[in-house]
Image 1 (tube, helix red, strand yellow):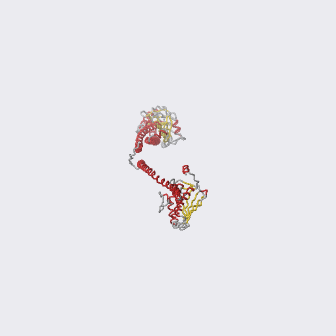
Image 2: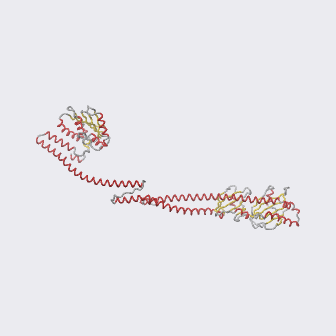
Image 3: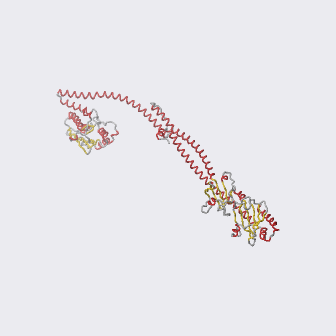
Length: 611
């Protein structure tokens, strides 16, 4: 496994390549395993199916063969000459014995010679004389003892017969192991027993009918047996167990464990087997296939899968490399361009070749470089403009200070000359001008704002005389409340200019300060001309849209700072819950209320020093 830290430090192309190869190897491995086990299952199923087909065909072949042998036995049974010999055998004397053997040789030869699988025919008389014909020999006569099968035939019907399995002994002198068909011979038409018949069949010759003719190696690994239910081997295609009893076969064919196919362990070796029982003979065609056949198939499949898997793995690795290289190529180009940018070269741009994610990344990168180049140019230009502005500011500062100092000189000269009115106006104007010179956005105490209003009113009284009166309702405990600078005085200025333009006497302006919960309310009201309802709504709409304006709202006559500017400054500093409210009606005056959060003013150290 690759350590996590090492994995994180790998190049993206290497990560994609490793990921692709791992995924493809897993897919190839799983595919090979599924194919392997599926192939083994199908091979086993196909093998069982083929063995079942063979056992069924072999069973029918044996049935046809034994049916032919039974028909031969019936021909011998009903042969008139043989009937006469057996029926009158008790009257045949020694002198006529040779004639009888010669006659039987001719008869039995005709039945046996066309069928090479018939090893011999034996006729047994009721007086215990046996005439047996062996292929390629003469008919011999001998005395015999009662056979066990004769007793069994006595208990059967007159048309019945028995099939005797081969014996491993060579008691009858045959060179081959033979199976036998036996039956009694009855006189026709009296149906009394006149003898018995035994036809010996060469098991090896019969096995020629059960030869596998296929071209595949199945025949080399296959064993074919004809077995009784008791496990007695009637036929073995290798002739090793013919005439013997095999317990493993008997167990596989037993009634309790009987199966048409399965697996069997015999002679310390594992076999697949199928069996087919004949309804005609009662024998079982048992076909064994060595497990080596399946092992060989498995090895073939393994070799094929290893070769195919190796080729697929090589092709998958090549494909994964090409995909990883194709995917990461734009990224490598982007890294190259970024390294150039890191060295300070902003001239390069990515070539946008597609509309996918990498195309979007290239486009964004190009836009970013364009923005950076533009910003660098703008910063450079702004630096130049800033230097110019600083120079202009230094020049502009000369004029306000010069005017402020000039007013103070005028105040001193007026008092020296005894012109107190001019001195008072010069002092008020100097203080007014000093208050408005700087720190417009910093809060001040309500006391400072009202002192500024007093300075403004001192100047206006010299101009208007007693045409209006300023009233204040301000509790002492609220004098240290924090308010925004230059917010009350512009309201007084608006009232004088717009409210009292046509009022010549009995005019007043009232300043009322109170708290409402956590709010500080400063109301400036007058008894001037007031405003129409439509004009108030228009002004309120302008206040609501203050954020769309970027400059001071200057009145048409150019005097003072408008309500929109005051409203905007308050909301910028304190939030949307604060600002300016307007009320009034035509001819009844106007009330403008400033809404601040109620806080106690705390002066900055530098401001205290200045004051």
